[in-house]
View 1 (cartoon, rainbow, N blue to C red):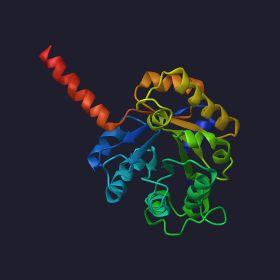
View 2: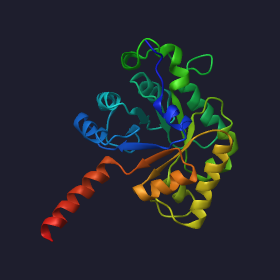
View 3: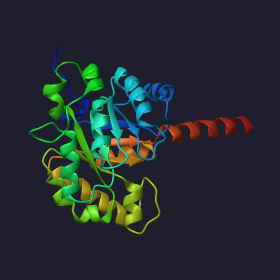
View 4: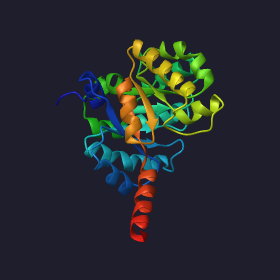
Length: 254
């Protein structure tokens, strides 16, 4: 059997950006509906989303079956949460609020097996999803994403990027905006925020690391891809549901 691969790395190697779906709502059926969109990767959000760990386990199955790369945003930089997501079969872990090189190093260590890290052995679901080659390939196919979303993180950006084994940087525009005195929100247009986003992108890209960002609309995501972002999250399931419901009612009333 061929060794498992992370299709995101293949997409980036081909010079293409990846479209990432975001699951904020819990449930197997919800995941099955969203993955039909043909996404490159799909992220289950355990930080601000409503899914519990046991639901994450169910939701990863249709993501894998659809051929998308399964990813999880963990609630915090906690070893148990990180390792549980990986043991469930996630090939990417997004960790919020990484602000220092030390925090980045601790996060990456929890994602990788020794000697590169300190992840504990026990990939029950991951072995079932990715086959017997998982143990040998895990450190190469898992992508640890550190979220840069505060002024402190930006001040320590070089130290974060210097972390061995770090897979990528993921920008959280809302918290990054709050941290710099703006109201929360995606698709930032303020020159000051665009400059900060560009600084993160340019610095990480120079280090050979892909950068992802949370977007509200396809047009903004396309613009960020043209700037060089490699992972574009476009909206989320709750937003799609609300927008579709609102459009249907408005069309009927009109």
